[in-house]
Length: 259
Image 1 (cartoon, rainbow, N blue to C red):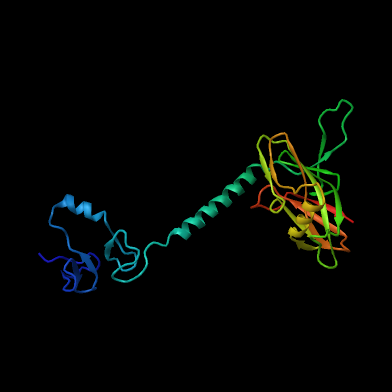
Image 2: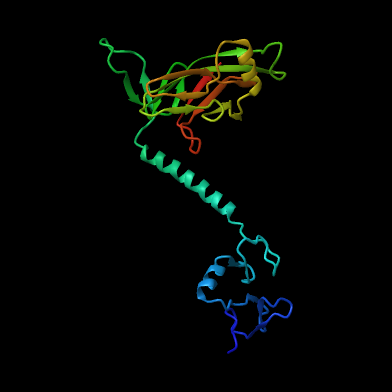
């Protein structure tokens, strides 16, 4: 009984160029000749082959290039990476949504007579000044002060610019350890323009003062204090620093520094 092509139904004949394959007389596709050693052996062999996703020819399972159509197999890695990336973004968004009931708060630093808990009031907006305490998700952030610097003998700002070092303190009142990065947890605007934090400013900071860069992990109930490095025009008037507790989301609140 003549064998039929599983794709088009055409008659299959032994391939004269490769007797190990059957050739379809209609669509010219190749199929590996069935084994005569029984169904059990056939099942074992079938695990060592696969179907080319382009020309549908049966090929070796380990083949990266189809010997029939010469096209590459696989190619699903990028799709998997993209899917993982989307899942991570979704997890971050869901976490933000679940904690959406927590709003940024102004914290009154004045204590009551019996030194009880700090008074809190809802902020009319999410902007804070030097010395004011902002609280979000049980994390308190405040800009304590700022200093200007013209650098030192090893590193100086560009001509017409000056280094600005805002000193920030963060208190972790949550139940979980949090991480803070001076380059990731904050955004900076000088006037209306976005500005990157300056590696030269951080280098000057490390060589001319005992203050540390604002990077590290904060255990529950603990604090961290450090400095950001900004290279601003010498005549700058305002600097805005935005804090965010999730790199995938927008900022939670900002601090305004006026010269």
